[in-house]
Image (cartoon, rainbow, N blue to C red):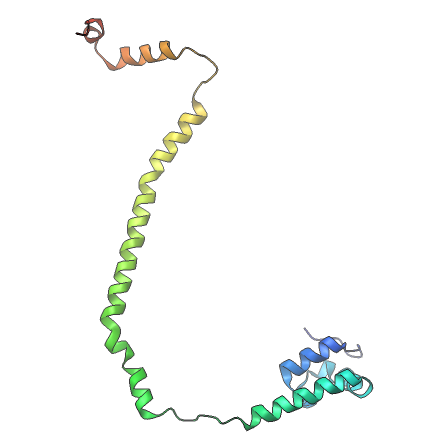
Length: 152
């Protein structure tokens, strides 16, 4: 997100430039460099922000760098996969098994949900002839000689 040339830089954009590129103007985007330098010359807050960014640049430049990791630490880091391979594989297998079981359970619920939804959507609730409906179901489901028998 660079500003077109000859567009003034706001103080908040100047602070963003300092945060992203540091206090060295040579690292700022060319399209905003001239406007940012103009703001730096005319605004005291911009100069204060630039001074803080310069102090941070000096501090970061003086920070020690670690070019080489100590051999003992490197060996300990490299043996982590070897020491914990069995634990990592067991954990992955358990999580795969749980995921498969969950998928299977959800898949088994699909017919139940479909039955509930279809029964709810397609049932005729406009009549109160529930007794007649149950009698019709019983007549279809049971032989007629069972219906005619007296219960003890």
